Image (tube, rainbow, N blue to C red; front, side, top):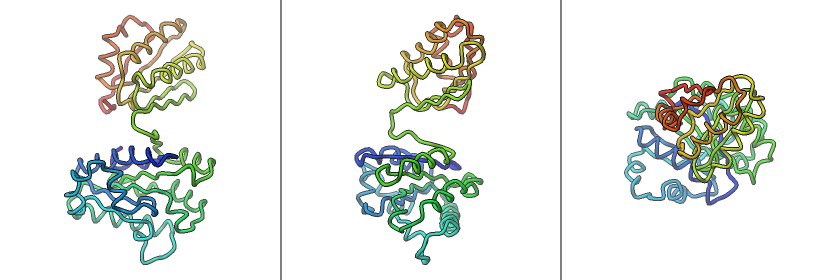
Length: 280
């Protein structure tokens, strides 16, 4: 994630809830950005610090100088006692401007949506804010992860929020996500030994679902790791579906080189499209 991104995350396991958020926070600090954490109000700030940064001693300096801050929705919207979308968005703009004035590259925030129950908020009102917050991200100086505990929110609310956010994150690092719509297959995350069965099934379903008779666009640009086994599986499945006219594989130059070494040039239907901005 980069400044300008607005993402959804979910969890149902207290042990696993911090992994993705920790990566998000650590990358922000490394890029010279300010990070503010609005954790579950039931979690003390020091505990949230330890959970997000297992080697907390390495980040004490960032916390002491204010690059890393812990707060709450109650504190953010003060002196108002009741949440309004306008007040929250206004305060986040102020925090972004302050971060820039302090010399940081921008602002990242982690917002655990447990605050909704803490402030006895109307879920519908919060959902409207979540899907109408574009103005916060337009200047690409601010990024945000809104994280939902599936034990607190109704399944339909969680799904609406997943679909409503511009970015939906995998639940934990190391996972693989796949979406197939019409003639486009998009894969996100890590393609390795642990996810190879899911990887294979995604390709098989996409090739079968589009009938092997036209162009299938396969987007591998969000794949952060591609193993030799999974790369070879791409070529094997396309070869097996011999009637397909064209399979466009969009990927990083690194992964394109891997596919070529595995014989992509010998699979007539495969066309590699390199993207410099892809994940590596």
